[in-house]
Each structure stands twice: as structure tokens, then as C-alpha cells.
Image 1: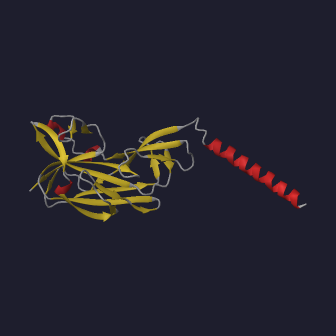
Image 2 (image 1 turned 60 degrees about the vertical axis):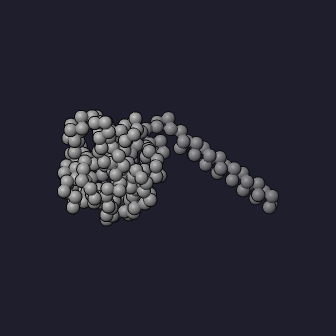
Image 3 (image 1 turned 45 degrees about the vertical axis):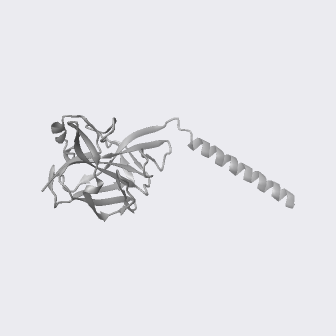
Length: 225
């Protein structure tokens, strides 16, 4: 009798395992794989093209677990935790009469209102969003210590230094959005490109552009006395 019970239990276990395996295989059958683009928005608290050296450049952002595509015609829902924002402050400099950008993190003091400041680098200041489900919030200020024309670029990530952020739907593993950092054109102060007379900017002493005019993740600001 005991052996019969053991055999029945073994058969039942094999059946459950095989069904689970089939289910898992089915969930990984992404013949209808779908991807789109979603914008993770950053806003300027004071989007003036010119600021005084006594002013603060405020960056604010709220990212929900519900992401919409660019056309707002589709959405996915997925918990987004440990969301990072890397901010790259650059100073516009002239190299042989050609505008370039140079690292300028040391030209600013930081004021953090919401979120956490992480270890930065020579090129960027890194921040962790404050997580209160289902939202991630961040507010950080840059107080200038020098005058001049500056450009700030930024990117979102889950892992520091990772260049691409793909968010997979919680309800459909075959559906994902590529999440891209974005600031509205009205806040980019893109008119400064006209005075620079270029369509991209190289890092000083580099042959390769870091910022292009058509990008969506930068803004200019001119600091005056």
C-alpha cells in the first residue's frame, strides 16, 4: 500500500512538473513580440535661457510604473525600482575656433530635494529616484559657481553606466518599451545652436560627437552675473 502511494505521488509530481515546463515554454514563445518607445520625462523648474549665478537650475522628474508610448496610444505597466538619472554638465569651450564641450561638474554645487545622490564621476552626477509605489520622484538643483554657456545632458538607467533601458510589461513578457530620456523642446533652449553654428558637439580632445542637435535629452543654459 505504501509503495502504491509513493508511485502515485511520483506520477503526480512528474505531471505537475511537465505542465509547468509546458507553461513556461508557452510564455517564452514570443512569436508576437512587440516593442515601442516611451519617454521618461525630465522638467526644468526654471526653463530660462539665461540665469543669474545666484539662481538654481532645478531638474524635476516623476516616473510612473505605467508607461505610454510616444503617441500615447498604448501602454505597459511594470514596477520600476532602483531608477537612476545620470546628469552630465558640460561647459561650452572653443578649440581652434570650433565649439566643443568639456566636463563641468565642478562648476556647480548640488541641492537635493527629493531622491538620493550617488557616487558621481568626472563626467556625471548620479541620482537615485525616491520610490513610493507606483511612482519614482526626483528633484535636484545645480547652483552655478561660474558664468558661461553650459549644456546639460542626461540619461536614465537601472544599472549605473548602462546605456539602454528596456521595460518589460508585467502582464506580457513579449511586450516591452525602450525607455528614453526626454525633455520638451520648449525647455531645451535650442536657439543656442544657431550661435554655435554646428549641429553636434564633441568632447574636448575627442573626434566623436557626444551631443546632437536632434537629441531629446539635453538643454542649454547661459549663466551670467
